[in-house]
Image (tube, rainbow, N blue to C red):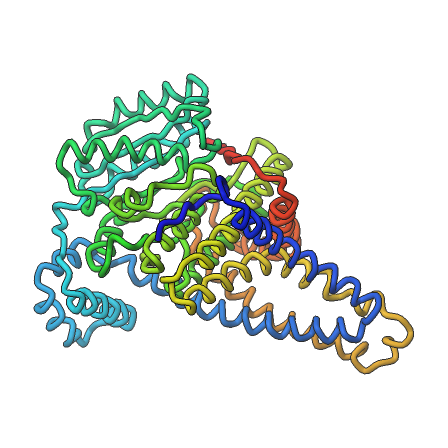
Length: 546
């Protein structure tokens, strides 16, 4: 389907649809919040009944999410010992490998058995697809790292992780995509890094994206698109097919584990329709986790948990943060949007629409690490975290464009349209409303009760039902605490029992964090979109202590 993934240059009908769908999320969120407040004043009985129904739905949803959070974490833990290079080698003779996997060794433990079951399913799907299997030796990786004001001490750890990994660095092209408006010292540092590390990779390019290009906004997508086009010329000159190139767009602070690119390469090789898929690892924020304030640490651990849960539902998984895709697909769809802030999710929707719904996200069982937002002072960190989460929530700008595309497309199945549209809409609405409903508005019917409501049975039983629901929710919180302690790296300075108790107690900040650093940024973003007061791309400040 030919569809311009942009809000610009629309005809009158498309502009009307665009504005309607821009207003809809914010209007819905405010209607829910204000509606509950007004009902609590005028019809507290109705409000209390609705709150109890919502709380019951929320607790069921919470238990559902915790089950899949545990399963996803278990899969991640099981695959840490996987030899991805060996699995890649086994794709050369699928029948022999399947025959071997049909009779698992009796000494295998349960995690090994489950891992092999997944492996067998992947190879069976690949065999049944009858698609050509690319050779491991032919696969190349392109890593684009956009740079605006990140200093060398932020960028270099990620560069080192690329050349120290198990995938051959001479088949990796690294591109530092520097903005022309960056300070001279930033541009000089990028050139010095290229000169120092170029010999370890296929090549190490530094691109300088010009400022003020017509039709572009000051967004990351414009910079990475400029860099990708130069990389395309590089591969063309060397006769490297785009189908054999996997492009990864990483934040400048991204550090990969040694097995990362072998795991990604394996997933790419065994995926039928591999060029029409994105590949999503689990992002963790371990680079500076012990330097960041507790509220920022808990919030970003929660972001990792959300991605772990999402990974269990690949049919509706959308790309987030650092991810990978076929360079062939990137070129075919016209690269990243150059006028949108939320490029990491926009690239999925743009691909999905271009391929008429025949595009998906493959979760890969590995992690990559980034920085928690941190500034020189506690207060500045709080402001920066709020701005970062608001920028993430600005992903709601995709909703009106996706809805216009769905209405215009005669080829994407209606069932897929409804499923994706509902998840996209509901995800943003719950992001902006649930924190307020759970921590504040849900108690208003009792707090503002008049004489008539205070004499009803629900006045006495409602708070008790709600308290019981929240007591049950503590089980889910306990599960999160345990998994967070398992997921976190060891504290290099102190790792005593009291330290672990302190890490667990940090989760008591959840009510305040969800209101001020989750719900409010989301509601802020939706309100701005509804009022047509658009955000400008804000580059997250990076600070490293020590």
